[in-house]
Image 1 (cartoon, helix red, strand yellow):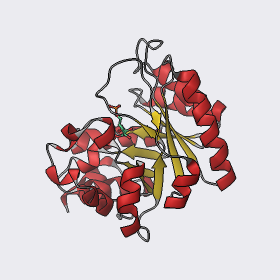
Image 2 (cartoon, helix red, strand yellow):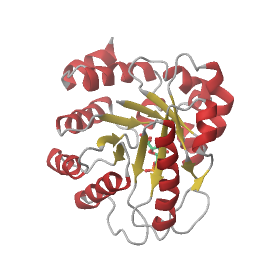
Image 3 (cartoon, helix red, strand yellow):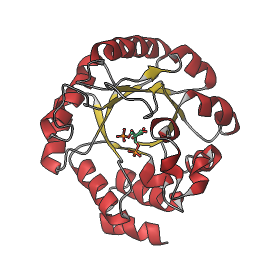
Length: 251
Ligand code: FBP
C-alpha cells in the first residue's frame, strides 16, 4: 500500500513547497498520484472538491477528515473539516483521521474518530488512522513503546490501517506490527532525506511486517516525483532490494 499524502499546505504551510515550487500546485501532485504505485491520494476537502473531478478516473481518493494549521499554539488538536457522508459524495473511497494520542484533547478526538469510523463502516470504506502520539502526556514521541501504543490504540478503536512514525529499528517496528494485531501498519515518510536513506528506511519497515507507506515530502519535494515512485513500487510491491530500487531512480 502506498498512500501519497498531500495535506501539508494545511498542516505545515507554504514552507513545504519552497524547494520545489511546482509542488504548491495541487495539479502537480494529483498528476504524480496517477502513478501505478499510488494506492490512494490523501487530501483535505478543498483540494478534493477543486481537483479530484479532473482525476476521478485515474486517482483513488482518500479523504483526510481532520487537519489543522501550525499557526496557533496550544495543546495538539485537529478540526474535523468534512463529514464521511460528504467525503463519499465527493468520491472518497477511504478515510484518513489523525489521533493525537496523549494530547489533552485525546478523549474528544477519539469520540470524533468513533463517529467517522462507524459512518465509514456503513459506507463500507476503510479507515486509516494517523496515530501521532504527542502532547502534554507524551514525553518522547519517538520512543518505540509510545509508537507501539499508538498502533495498539488504532486496533482497539477500529482502524483498518494505522500510520505510524518510524520507531527507529526493525525490531521496534516488528513490535509495533505485533501490537497492531489485525490492523495493518504503514510507515510515515517524514522529512525529506537522500534516496538511499529514505529507501533503506522503507525496506526496513517492509521487512518488519508493515504493508507500505504514507508519504508526502519524500515524493513531492523531489524534482521528479515519478522516479522515487518507481523505486517505491519495486520495494513495496515487487520485494526488490534497495540497490535495485535505487537503480530505478536512475533510469
Ligand atoms: P510526510 O511523508 O511528508 O511526513 O507526510 C505524512 C504526514 O502525515 C502528512 O499527512 C502530514 O501533513 C505530515 O506528515 C505531518 O507531519 P508532522 O509530523 O510534521 O506533523
